[in-house]
Length: 150
Image (cartoon, rainbow, N blue to C red; front, side):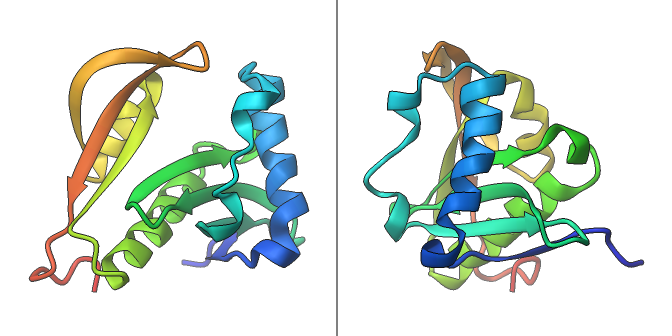
């Protein structure tokens, strides 16, 4: 089965503007995150993955930090529920596995908890607000003896 999109590792120097555009549309405009909270000094040194439409336009993003945290997962509305988020998450998890991380963590918006739980993430601790949006911490232990991410 061929997919209508591709996922690849991003090159920050080449993809920064397109990544910023997705973040602006999804987090700042759609979700109302204050702009001052969206941009971080660590962005250029993170491992970014992008999803591209058949026309090679960015439609989704995710990042993995060197502290084994997955974040900034965003998919444009027209591409949601089409497997883009799952493919981006899998790219980040494969990278975490290759980097030898034993666990990965993320801060999930509460409506997205079932999405991450389907991939094996476990919700931990109480709900909290991040940029005014309800979240919960989630963790996934990577089994380096298993073949599912190898």
